[in-house]
Image (cartoon, rainbow over all chains, first blue to last red; front, top):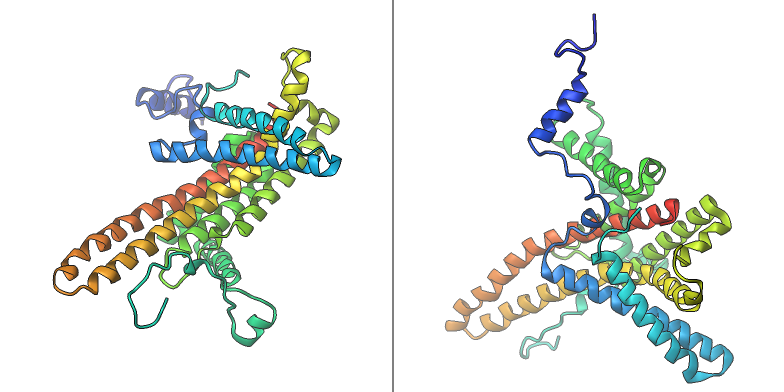
Amino acid sequence: MSENMGGPGESFEDRLRAARKRQGMDAPPGTDKATSAGKESSALGMGLRVGVELVSALAVAVAIGWGLDRWLHTLPVFLVIFMVLGGAAGIANVWRQVGPAPRK
Amino acid sequence: MQGGGEPTINALGQFKLTTAGGFIGSTVNFTQSNLLMVIGAGLVLLLLYVGSRKRAVVPGRLQALAELAYEFPFRMAVDQIGPEGKRFFPFVFTLFFFVLMGNLLGLFPFSFTYTSHIAVTAALALLVIVIVTIVALAEHGWRFFTYFFPSGAPVWLAPLIVPIEIISYLSRPVSLSIRLFANMVAGHVMFAVFAAFVVMMGSWHGVGMVAALGPLAVNVVLMGFELLVAALQAYVFAILTCIYLHDAVHLH
């Protein structure tokens, strides 16, 4: 009649969860985003990822700076400013990937 | 390649587009890249159709593969985005399998890797970033723009932080497309270079025939490595899409 035939007051789900925890089959809490985001553990993959992040941020920033200069006819000004900002944005990108997980 | 002379390394010729499908194909500019996209989509549909036809309680090999193909992107979407991720599952599924099929089908001889063209990967990445931005605007309205200024930072830093955050946001599609494109191009160029070494060394006769086994072995190893890269890059593309969607739904 009753749903929990197996144990006193424990549902099957509870016992399964306990068993899984005993066997270490569940991922420990707190490893959700930062670690599962990039499973490329190899140094080559890591280096490539970081390089792409740095270069793409810089490319976008240079494109914006150059576009602004072309539009406003102030050629070196915005290009110089946005190159610095692009480098910073690249570092920010990399930090977001490899740094500690953001606190919620 | 010059006819008759020394064999040369022509590593980039494999990325040249040609039209497929005879007269009709050349009239509408239907390239072999497009053909491979259609084949890839057809294979995924066929897998899901054939795999789900039996509906066995204990799945056979094909059904297990089809179920895995469904559940893997589903888990990815739900785990990364949260329970709301179910809404985006069809999108993530499509992206993942489009990229995966492009990477895998390109490994066949005489095939073509459509993900090795920046036009394709950039279009995919632009699609992702436009959808992410629309989702964020629909979910949060004007509050979306607070995304570019993290709460708790001193206000006088705003002129510095806001441009950096905007550049960082705009660099997402660039890095997304370049990562996939560069990985695919690098792998296939290496294939071509080592295959050319085999031909060059083989043309020396005698000792060259034996020496040519070296680059041949490298290519065999490389094939295994490229299979890994093909799956990994499809996974990375899909998971980064999920992370961006997570940011769009939750704003930090």
